[in-house]
Amino acid sequence: AQTVTQSQPEMSVQEAETVTLSCTYDTSESNYYLFWYKQPPSRQMILVIRQEAYKQQNATENRFSVNFQKAAKSFSLKISDSQLGDTAMYFCAFMKRNSGYALNFGKGTSLLVTP
Amino acid sequence: DADVTQTPRNRITKTGKRIMLECSQTKGHDRMYWYRQDPGLGLRLIYYSFDVKDINKGEISDGYSVSRQAQAKFSLSLESAIPNQTALYFCATRRGASTEAFFGQGTRLTVV
Image (cartoon, rainbow over all chains, first blue to last red):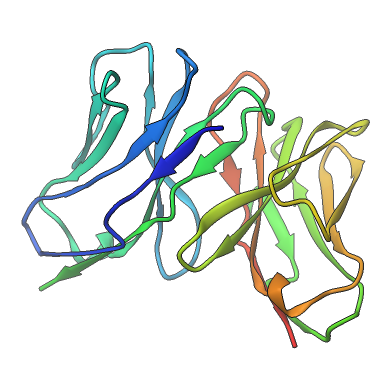
């Protein structure tokens, strides 16, 4: 079974600073997809960034980037120039082939951006 | 209007009652999923469906049932609600060839 571990239940960062959220996963598959989702207080699930395991290049979306270390099974999210609107719960997720390519989520990291 | 709509948004029900949560989508996606979110546990898969005739259990299906009435509609039922089913429930859809999932706004269910 695949597991996704987020070891930081809560984090805080000052506005304009950089923060890194950690995620590790366990799988025996060689081809898979990894995601970071953001859940603000509105509770909407918002896709932040996506990484395909067969691509060595780390994904980047504006201020959000990942450090994907396939051998170490690590997938961290870096948020640069943090903004107050980044305050949210962040979930790391793994897409697996069995269970119909459903998402397997970590327990989440609550990020607070302070002025 | 949202592409993936869940009704109701919030619901309080009593122990032992039957309740149905509904999900409808206008995206034309064939894959639909129900997840449950509990504080400190993330989201966990309850059921998923690839089309109207295909229903599959997820990791926490006990106490739940689903119905795929049409490609656009996927309902989750609690036959006899219990307090530990109090949670935030999400419906999600996905087109078969894509990895991007689209989520509804969530239904907060409280069982008292």
